[in-house]
Length: 257
Ligand code: SAH
Image 1: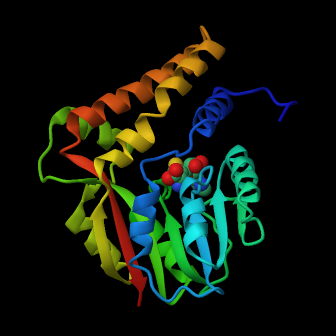
Image 2: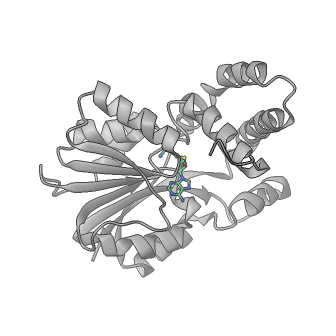
């Protein structure tokens, strides 16, 4: 990497990664909600094979590890996140059964019918919810589960400002009935669906960010790209507070049939 000329894209990528690596979570969620979602999943034995896709630095994986006994393989695109992830698992003495690996969710290399559970919080949008449900299904054993969180509209109509924001960032956002139907059509029984409470955004995702933003702006004083990145994070936070009745994250849990 050091011999290459850094493109804007590389720089942006590293900057985003650095910003989020200073946070415990890279998306909305909380330990209570991970445990709640896990409560819908049965038949997990000490031999269970679990995948956590788009694991980030491992906030939710720690909760999975504390509440299951099987082997967890966690995948993320960013090697810096995986380094932090594996360090964390070592510190918590989970490194004998929890491994973080750099990988691409568009091109997973699990054996077919090998997994008991696929977990993915705040990340399946990177491949697309519907495509992810369909493509990842082959890795699950029959009777295995998938549990994902996904950005979802709560209403049939919504103000233009927030519609435009989501249409630009993730046009696949849709309502709960549509997402549940897509899960069923992909070959799962939709076993549970619940809305993540507001505190998974406010307390667990947005509240820890201002000190990280301050430090970041200090470190990269005058750097346009860093300033733009923080501006966009602040804008996203403001939109959430303004429009939280219209959208949020929903846990979708399905059982492969
Ligand atoms: N599950 C974590 C992180 C969510 S953020 C949490 O809830 O806190 C989304 C994550 O997906 C990021 O860590 C990002 O690096 C990862 N990601 C994005 N595209 C990816 C891809 N193609 N393959 C694997 N991981 C990807």
